[in-house]
Length: 362
Image (cartoon, rainbow, N blue to C red):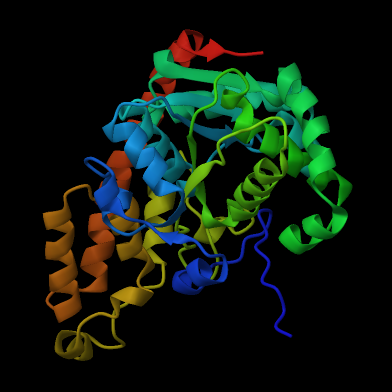
């Protein structure tokens, strides 16, 4: 009997085969044609899979109520490119008319990472929320809450805990640590929170490592006999790999991880040391061209740093044919990254003044 595949939301492993992930978990391939004016990561297959895409597409096109929701895990003083992609997708659906909710997972941070509620609150207000605004959220159209202050979420967590068995949790997550059980079921309540007052479809943009939370929520919704909810939809983006290509970017490997924000000089040094798709010699490179699939810097350009599809395609063709070297690609990335980091730092400072415009739910 084949061993059941487990995805760890708390780990740092890199998904090697996204097609297999779609097959193994019966996901839908992401279909950008369902959504008006898809954003950069939707267009470029960085968003690669989904669940329940059509009901969200219908809500957008027929202007029916729906919501988009995501969370902030305030365990550090910086974020990473995975957070950036989530915010970009939240901002997209917000522009498409979604009611927008951001939860601060302070209870989860306490249960799984040992972060105090006070520390989590300070980090969220001083940095994480302003960073999300700087990356594209419209504060006047966004509702924020802290898990520890939301009585409805806590009550729902107790209710939903009766709808999952220990064996099911083990099958989904691979272990049954009490803190992780509490955190996961609280996330189910978070995901469904916008429906407590009004039943409507909702979409959760996440990295593929968060798939277990989506599956658990959909399963619990299916088991509710008296309270009927829309099963949450989701879209999943690929990881931004570490600069050495081994795992998803992780703060545990600072030499291969780019944090947001970070000193552009330090980032450029990391980029110059990153694994590339260039050949061993210049002569060989000109003859055979780059192995772009192995190039982590081009992946940064594709996922984050070049908005214009034609400009990216021009670099791709020149690099693939050997007319452009890996050094030249890294120079472009350094220039773009410096511009991005300088703008982000300035935007975060400005966004701190806008936190008061958010709606805080309790």
